[in-house]
Length: 73
Length: 155
Picture (cartoon, rainbow over the protein chains, first blue to last red):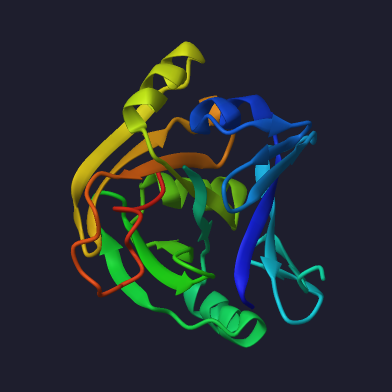
């Protein structure tokens, strides 16, 4: 595991954009070093942590999905 | 500057989660506090890339917001810490969008002085998100992994 790339959130993006002042690109909040991608759903929560890693893998830790992906060439 | 600094998990079994984080992610704790004053949670910090961290909190006192949240919603992400450069400018944006502030801190940390603001989860959408801003350059080269924040969940 080498770096934090972003998170995925069930909930409205506008409030996070207002809180950070970061630009929204569709449903994705673009931070300097990561993204927060928003979608609809019945329960608002941060559902996923996106990590850069040496191998592709997905796992559940503490009730949150962790998605590990190798860096794109 | 707008950075994703620290996702924070709330768990009822921090020892088991620590073992999973070590085994599945290969991460070791770089900091641990048995109880964060005022919040009733323990806090374990794991380095997650350059100057960013994963935090695992567990309720150590009954009747705290963390304990109630764990009982109500179970394990999950309880907070996300975001860093912004201008907290004063943020204050105006928050007011303009009706986002309430539930707590503010401004105190020295191991790696300099940081101000932080906890936002009301009902206004941001759970989890409670928090923004921090370093108000003074780093004063110490040492790192305990708590450079960006003061304490933990307010949701």
